Image (cartoon, rainbow over all chains, first blue to last red; front, side, top):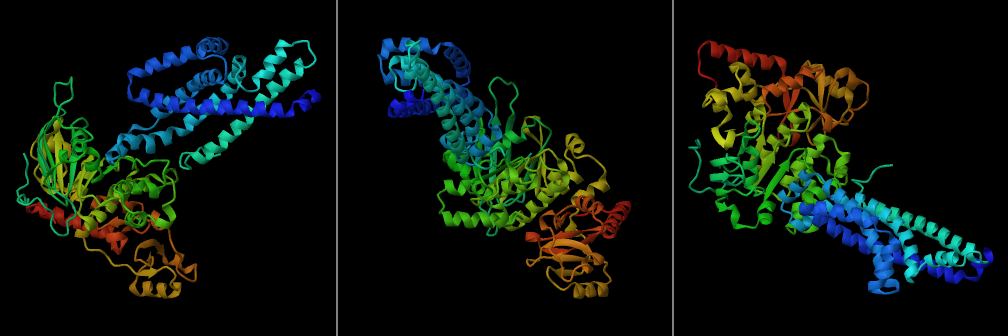
Length: 215
Length: 401
């Protein structure tokens, strides 16, 4: 086991970095998409039903199948992996963003408008900051989930630690099979914990003291 | 019926010491689609510059709708509203609203912003320089009776309901707008706090002379705060628009009579102001003064207690001599929790306050909480007896002050 790690130290670290990079990028893109969609959904009530259906159906598509479908369209490579991870990462953020934006007291919004804030200012200065803790919780769920999805995306030759898992499985019975799978899995778990911690700390500094849940 | 003969309608411009602007509503109608009856059916009235006008009526009478049409949170179906002579549709909605203070129930502060940031919202949008905003925030906190150093960087959840509402009022006044709209601002606080907030508003208004339109469902609040009271029936039909004195003395119809309630002599309690009664002087002392000299002064005057004032002449405590004796010098008190009466408070408030006081009286303050004197139970009952005799003699009701 240690020999396996020692021989490939640089390669493993590089893969871990790529894995984290893929996930962070995908979640960042997904957050922007989800928040924009959530704003649209909370402003146009007719979209709410549609969004619910799409996110329910979306999450039932097996990620393995989606990777297969995407390969036919965007080919083999990191782009496919990014699209796939982003696709799944949108849903938890979207759901929380809709809940968070809706939970803002309407009298606060009316009060903001009554003071002469325009639509954009009300959104940027009142509604989004107040919904932020809930959205952030969605981002954390999304990040955890994306760690696993990114591993599967390795089948489309995406970068990251999934490669070790797939290589290990395909060589099952061989000398390096088990260490390969274990290294991939354990590192994904460790990465997930680290990123979650970073997000937690980032969230602390980004959430106003006035609405932070005191501990 | 619009009953405002003594208005200076020729200019519509505020007099020198009035910072408010006149508001006129002309045949304003609000009809919601799919509803047969208009929410507001042809409302016309003039709110004189620098006065407090109270919109009061049963729920669903259209009072809040009428208020929100003034800052275009609700667009009228037809009719014209003017502020200081200018049609409110001449400016953009946002520009109009930045020039009108808006205060709603509970203060409606933004929980993620500090007190200072909440107050600074409108001045910031108007592009005031940072130094001027900071100065204005402190000035306003002081005006509403909160110590700026202590409160400016707190978050709303660190404040009591009454303090939040005070900040809400400060926020409404922030950019010094000529017109302030208030939608049941004191509805969410306990009775004692409500009375204090009302008193403070009267004190602030004495200083600023804004045009204030306030919606309430509480006729006592309307009578206490209003220079004029607008009583509305369903569809925002004017039942009566007049001074509180005339509404109480001569209700226009049965609706008003029912709404106002009866009991002619007790009603005087809400009409008579503390300032109409002679205040009793009490021995005062300053925080930090020697206890012995203060006590000597009180004993010479025959007082059992001392009113403690801070260095700005605001009462901070009312102590019995034995309490003062315990310390070498006069100790500071808790000014913010000190229950006092504004000189424009009603006798109703005064009696309420006395009931909770161990001194059988209440401290009366003027502008910026300056100590004026003490009102005691005997002088209130004496005043009521005199009124009773007037009534018994068939004398005309007291003319309003």
